[in-house]
Length: 206
Image (cartoon, rainbow, N blue to C red; front, side):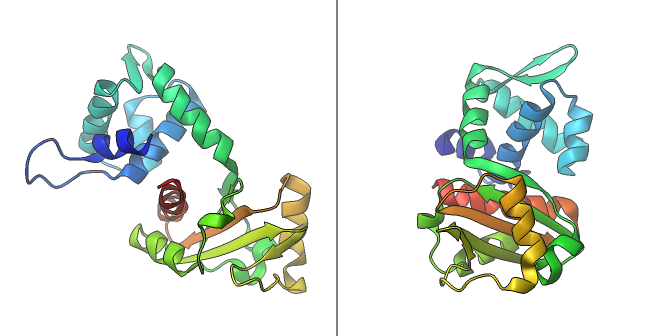
């Protein structure tokens, strides 16, 4: 899957600067899967990427047999649906979380929560993940692990009782299992917070 995505994001002309990244490709597949049928203009607005770059991405995805373009819009074909299923099986939850729930874990205006199924073994200290997310526009990244019915930082230190609302949200809304990863990507721009979370997912998939 990653080989296909990296190939799509690679400039086709020697020396050309890429107009989008593998993270944008992942996001576009998720967006098309979410809407089933979507216009190029809507994709451009969702990703906050110019329509020229979106046209190029669509052309590459079509050439790789991941999407098909019909009169009423863009949709995934069987190969694209297979990739979407892999992502759907890994991503247990994603969405913006209110500051009142996160308390001091809300480190910017937009705080994007992503929960990944049983990928704790991919984490070292959480620093590498933070640096990757920052590269893609996030201002801060919080990495947590669910283990033995507890929410822990990568060093094994438990999340404090002052975060009771966040713990309650996680345990009530999401069916967590041992070694699930909890990411909070924080940025002043919503799309940057989303890209930060997806950049860590992409890193874990390597």
